[in-house]
Length: 128
Image (cartoon, rainbow, N blue to C red; front, side, top):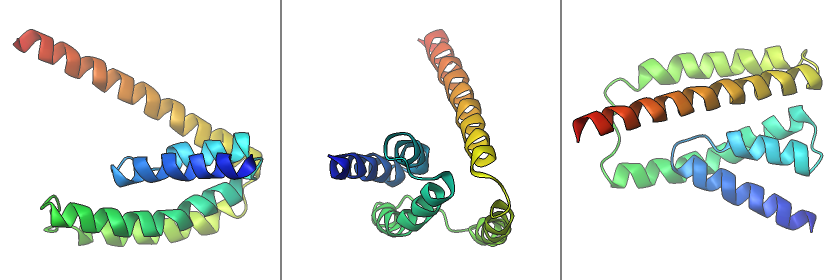
């Protein structure tokens, strides 16, 4: 049964990751809440599973002409440096604090997505 939960987590994370939404927003909560995986380990698993998902997604998006590579270095360099610094920083953070921080991030993201969705629907309604 546990295998099915891990499989579902991987499928959900893979679909969202392939769409460019960040599979970790689903994968990390599933691993911590339903599989009992500690927060640090769940986030590590997410980072590791992101690599093959990103490679496949990148190839698909490139094949479809959906990549804008003009300013990519301006994103890659700071993201890489800050990811390394974040990985070092998080080693000293307790699992409970990390869990609360990630939960707060998901709540803020949900409110933002809800607000932008409502605003887009209202704009669409005004147009037609």
